[in-house]
Image (cartoon, rainbow, N blue to C red; front, side, top):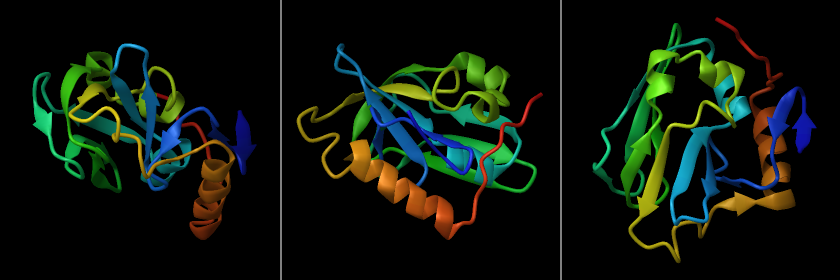
Length: 148
């Protein structure tokens, strides 16, 4: 697992190179969350709203909304799919986004409409890490973990 300026950057995930990470599962579902740099940029998260299970989401549309004291923003899905599971715990404990962005703070598990192309165009591995480092430098971030 790479780390840069305090930001954790797992090489085994897929990234939209903005805010979102994706983890494909053996069951055909893709787990979606926000990156460590994104949670840092957002500040202390005070509310998370995730669309309901069964909701079809078009590519580029939001699956969830985050709120902090300084920011409200949507979490876009880079492909079309249906929400199969959402993280109910995260809606009750939104601070988990700041504490464990790649673990307990996942947002939803999505069934892609087209599994063969869902992750195309996303970055992974060393190429993703290089691009994420550039993103971190662009915004001059030092990642941190906020707690409750």
